[in-house]
Length: 352
Ligand SMILES: NC(=O)c1ccc[n+]([C@@H]2O[C@H](COP(=O)([O-])OP(=O)(O)OC[C@H]3O[C@@H](n4cnc5c(N)ncnc54)[C@H](O)[C@@H]3O)[C@@H](O)[C@H]2O)c1
Image 1: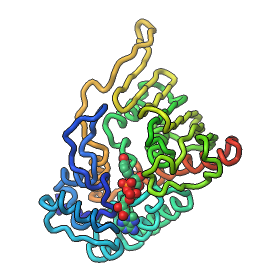
Image 2 (image 1 turned 30 degrees about the vertical axis):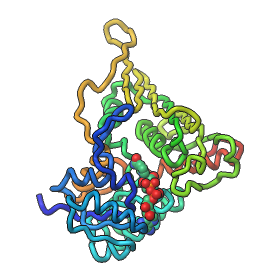
Image 3 (image 1 turned 90 degrees about the vertical axis):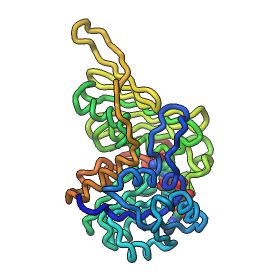
Image 4 (image 1 turned 120 degrees about the vertical axis):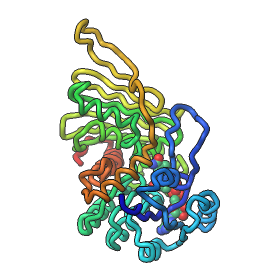
């Protein structure tokens, strides 16, 4: 193996800088949780050389926490200056949801070969398309950090579907609940996973937003910190392979997350804490239900994202080799923005 790739981070809030947590909260605690703690674990593949944020206190806090691990870190407030000076192989973009596009576009045009962008790809289709045009004209790798695609627990469902264990996927019901169930903020994760399990591309949607969000026709999340800034939504997605899916997101309840995938020969229900496989016993014809996976070595999805991007870059691979490439992530932006358009038009079924 050659020298580790040079990485730079833009945006230094908790998702980037948090330490590996040792406590177990409710349900599974997937570690490493943050980008710094993920890169910390793969020193042969990636080395962090510089960080950037507009807020000096976040730079100081990052250095305080991670300075002994990366003592020679260079720090910047101007991401263009960082890219010009540091010439990173991999750039992490972890700025607010609506401030990914211009940075990814600029970085691709400045010749950064691989970019890991936090989710969602963008908050408008126009931004998503500008980003895709930029990576296409520059040959840039772009991964969007829809964490569960690499989380072995959630990825196992995709493997079971691919192995034909539940037959052909027919319908999906997705539930996202709790204060963070805002459409863009965490709805992104749920809708992306729904897309991942559906397998096709969304073609039609209808949706209805929670009360008080009439006139919410475009992202106003403002960083997505305040649950009041974004609606919960209930909606329907039809895919080009015939899969029909219902999404239900509410901020007004306990926190929960579940996806129920019904296939022609079985069913899978997965949440943050449990996973059930329902199949028909070949001998008795009875429906049997069992938990899965039986055993599994867990590595956090963020580490998986970094490992995949670094190995694809090392192998001279393309965006088609990335599990959460911009073309996949664009489908999630299509559903998010399609939901807003449908609600605005009286919750009618609209073509995407
Ligand atoms: N994958 C996950 O599970 C997960 C979890 C949390 C957050 N996120 C995503 O991470 C991103 C960051 O979210 P957040 O709420 O933690 O942070 P945030 O929205 O508060 O902003 C992140 C940081 O970006 C910095 N920033 C903004 N513009 C900048 C610029 N031009 N140059 C340098 N720095 C700049 C800000 O100063 C801020 O410190 C969002 O896209 C969010 O959706 C993902």
